[in-house]
Image (tube, rainbow, N blue to C red):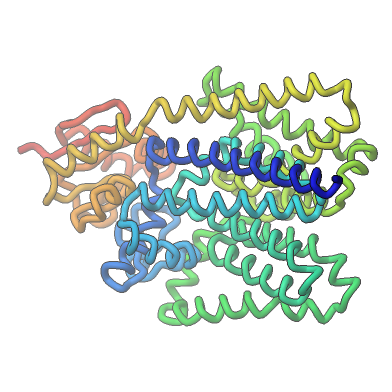
Length: 500
């Protein structure tokens, strides 16, 4: 009887997890089809496109002199980003075709792997399918997770590989501890060669998860960890050896400032709270009144973590130190190892926050029956804000209403003229040779465009930066804007062209 009940309970909670993944799929598909493309997606797709069509892993769309972090050589070799996401795109495009939407579908699939990995990790270390399903439900409906899985950057791939490393390790460690450790480190190494931030966060999480097991068995097990990283470094090193001077210039230029807060712990903590969380959850200067509602999300996560950590009774109900230590170590690692505080790295945080929040909700629901109405209301508010945030972005549809029309205009009127604009427009056009991403508008190359595109969030911001730091460049841009004719204006995109 008890076995039948336990089996039915497992099936029931597995259905809940699958339902949560179905909600994730619906939200992610709607988001990837409507979200406005941006330069990072095109910058990271361009080397794969080049490799697929010319056999060279080059970032051809970028004019390096016009960008502060892209030194010479990127149009020949791509060393400024890690290679694995590029290499994963090539067979994907060969099967599904090239474009912004196929690229985003690749991220969506990695997001599915991430959800499955989180479910398995929580289920194994806690022994509670209900807790695993609850955690997946929180994560699958998180706007940061869904948006990351709907964007053509490499962050979701790196995060999913790190999460799968934990799932593989805890699943195999009792039956085959050596294979568990080796396989997990292979996955973390893959995460590292996808993006250093995801790889480092994944490595910290895995080291915490495996520390006790390593002590109980043999420390020689640690010898199983380095080979995957050495193999990855050797393979990349072969490519780097073609132009090590360009590697040094590109890689360390892009890595500049990544550990700037390491020697200033107080500043590090302050920036982490303000820039990583508060600004991205509604307190940015440009946030609307509706955007302030996202503060409820971070308040829910923070409250859940604080209450869980302050209550021995709740932690005892969870009865899984790893379920608390691994997420906390990941959050700490992210704070220490990334001083840029960029919004797209939030995915590494929300996985940990959702895990801790799930542990709190599960334990508080069982330990404090009188608090259930308050818990229900808190979850309802959380869900309402999450879904409202995503629904608003989906409904606005900047892809269909703003981006696609300007792409169609350029394709129909300037198919052969030299165009300067943000790289995502070039990607939508198929990276033609006449399209260049150069926000200096030819100041350094002395080659002026036949037409150029100014969008409200990309080139306009670059122009403002030039005005503050490089007035000569800004003067050149102002001259072109005043002498060219504005032939297209949708509010978000403006196209300027030479006089006929």
